[in-house]
Image (cartoon, rainbow, N blue to C red; front, top):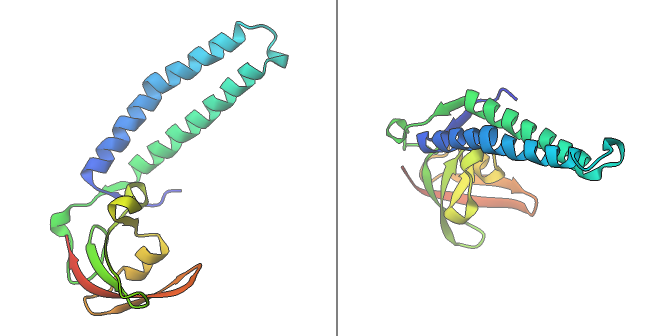
Length: 157
């Protein structure tokens, strides 16, 4: 899982803040839950204790994943993005040639993807299909429902 993770400076800060919360108040809360469960008696038959220990395992795994993502993060600066072709952080206006509807997407890292705000991951099928395309080119993208054809209308930051 040592894959490079491209993020904006703001997203990296959010990840660091989340990690701090998980390591401080998150760990303290789980320790409190374990302590409460211990006080209820025999640990062999204590489902509450088992659940708290399991939650602790999930919590520590989440911390490890976040630490790895931060360690492999590379900050992207919009000033350095080439708008002659689609790349990460590009805003791309495309027309679906099947439905004739236009839509605008911003290609972002997996951590920042949010379809409701028009941000799609560069590792999604549509994101992968659009990467490297220039204005006027047609991207044929295989999706579970079949093949979608998108024409790139514009590229901006």
